[in-house]
Length: 164
Image 1 (cartoon, rainbow, N blue to C red):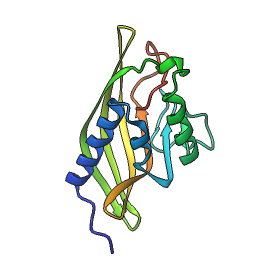
Image 2 (cartoon, one colour; image 1 turned 90 degrees about the vertical axis):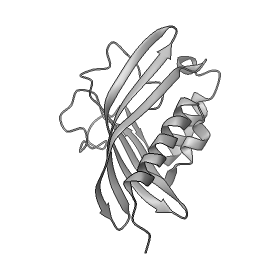
Image 3 (cartoon, one colour; image 1 turned 180 degrees about the vertical axis):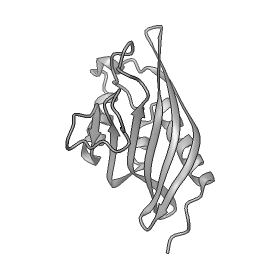
């Protein structure tokens, strides 16, 4: 039986994920996901984004493991005009809570604020993160990351070309 997942372990993991994203080390970020991992961003302004289903509505992002890899490859190319040169970001993670432990891992909640600087403009994205984390050998892996925006719409931001 795997050792229980602790809040401290989760916080260290989430802070590492934020640092990888801020440093544009996207290949390393991608490796944080399990083989069946998913990265989801429900539409802004909906009720209950934590339980929204990408099979029944159009998500801003609904990536399985293959699409996560494609997103990383695309964002690292110079031809990705929306993110080249790369934006400067700061991913802040707070209020980390272990919601529930189960046989396959743990359900986690955290709040986030992500600042993005691009072409001298600052955009702010904030909301709540929901993770399904599992233990894999000597580390944690992401089975699902769901970034639920607390925005009513993607305005004035307008786009979501980077990773929350």
